[in-house]
Image 1 (spheres, one colour):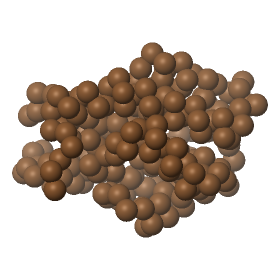
Image 2 (tube, rainbow, N blue to C red):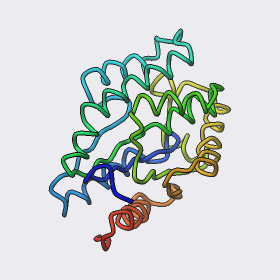
Image 3 (cartoon, rainbow, N blue to C red):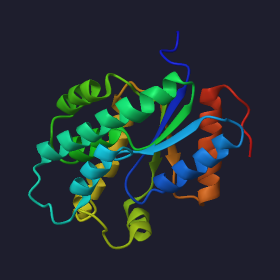
Image 4 (tube, rainbow, N blue to C red):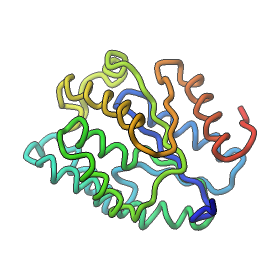
Amino acid sequence: MPRPYPGHFFSLEGPDGGGKTTQARLLVEWLRSFCPQVVACHDPGGTDLGDRLRSILLDRSNTAISLRAEMLLYMASRAQLVEEVIRPALQAGAIVVSDRYLLSTLVYQGMAGGLDPEEIWTVGRSATGGLMPDLTVVIDVPLELAQARVGKPRDRIEDRPDTYRQRVREGYLEAIRTLDIPHVLIDGSAEPDIVAGHIRDEVARALGITPRS
């Protein structure tokens, strides 16, 4: 099938405490060792508008945000990120690595939060113009390990109870079983360098190259 753009798009997903942000950084460092065009971004955020929305979404004093409003704010940040950063980079032939993307909202506000996942998916497709990653890497860790890594809650989302965090983990596992998207599930409980090696292997396979250590 012809590609809609010359670049490649990868997203890293998973519950808080899975090491996703660390792994996104390591993946970008590895890609930049042989690719001249690699763009790293995070969702929500990554633009002036997105960073403002991110501060609203994560501010622990903003307890009155409804779940639907929360979902729409995430989508607004994502729409701006796609328009301003991701799509232009892909059209220029770059490799884009995003720390979270649409799957996060589907899981956090849908499967764990209680909003209709099909509605979220529909809104998400509109917000992103249908742009989806070439590969979504889901990093999974047991709840106890994730909690130990995160420590004390640092933002409004992390303030939610253990029952919510367990639903998030289960939501990711259900999503990748049921959604027709290119994905790989990675065990994030190993040492970071081992996890990074597994992710590099999968990304190299998606790029059609021989992995480099």
